[in-house]
Amino acid sequence: MGNLADCQKLENTFSIKLVIFCDLAPLCAKYNQMKETDFTKVKPYNQDEEKTAQLARMFNTISGKYDQFNDIMTWGLARSWRKSSLLALKKFEPKQILDIAAGTGDMCIKSYKFLNPEHVTGVDISDKMLEMGRFKIEKAGLSDKIDLEVQDVASLTFADACFDAATIAFGIRNFEKLNDSLKQIHRVLRPAGHLLILEMNEPEKGILFKGYQLYTKVFVKLTSRLLSSDTEAYDYLQASMHAFPNGERLINILSENGFKLNKYRKFTFGVCSMYLVEKV
Ligand SMILES: C[S@@+](CC[C@H](N)C(=O)[O-])C[C@H]1O[C@@H](n2cnc3c(N)ncnc32)[C@H](O)[C@@H]1O
Picture 1 (cartoon, helix red, strand yellow):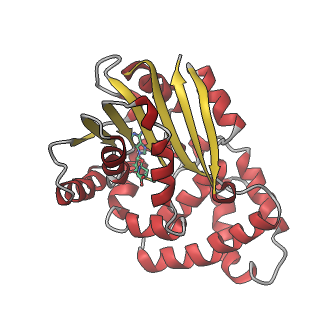
Picture 2 (cartoon, protein in one colour):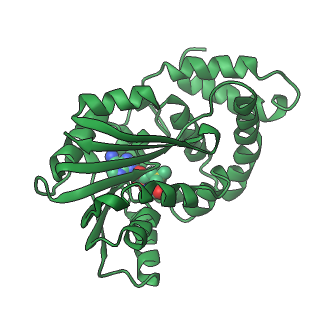
Picture 3 (cartoon, rainbow, N blue to C red):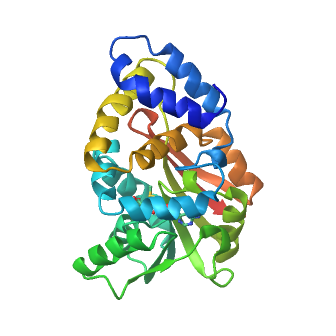
């Protein structure tokens, strides 16, 4: 059992058949082992190619099914998590908002609706995800209020201090260069500007964790296989969630990159967390 890919293959082969009947402890142990893995090494397709390039390809492939899969993976709760987290920004009245890893545009549209800024700019590495986003933005009649651009968060082209707030929903765990990305976000935010992060994570150990494992390993896995032939993409989404540092660990990384914590909140038994931090 040499590496993460082997672990995932073994698990793919056996988990659906065995998980219903067996104790989940061995799988949990294997996942815990993966948790020690550097999350940047959790890649969708192979270990040789850069993670960002693989991700752009992967999200391009699944862009047409992403919204459906997101609803399945989050029990449809992602919509209310996005709304609740955005409301934490309301009192700061941001006028220029940058949405990073904008994907199919939901966070951009909700930002505009709930925060009433002058403008929202969304960036993402996947042009096909943004294409879906543009369609939704046009349908919402917001094409003159929201722009979408293909950009990697680790090398943003915007001027220094030009945004009042930045948001990242379900994107940060994909960033190949997390420190470079946070430095870029810090650079484009104005002094005391805010960064809002929303990210899925596994619940704490215990009965909830076991229920969650069953749900993801049986229901989500089977449904994703019905939705798309790119099964590696959906396996990646699960594995990356497992490997990404959350809670205290992420707060420390944010602090090392010049952000101080304003608010940390967990949603729905801790399966989703919101981090609101301020540029120091
Ligand atoms: C799970 S989707 C989230 C989409 C959207 N924010 C939402 O709320 O549903 C993650 C997105 O992160 C984007 N992404 C991954 N790495 C990125 C990077 N380095 N820079 C910008 N976007 C990135 C992917 O292309 C993908 O669209």
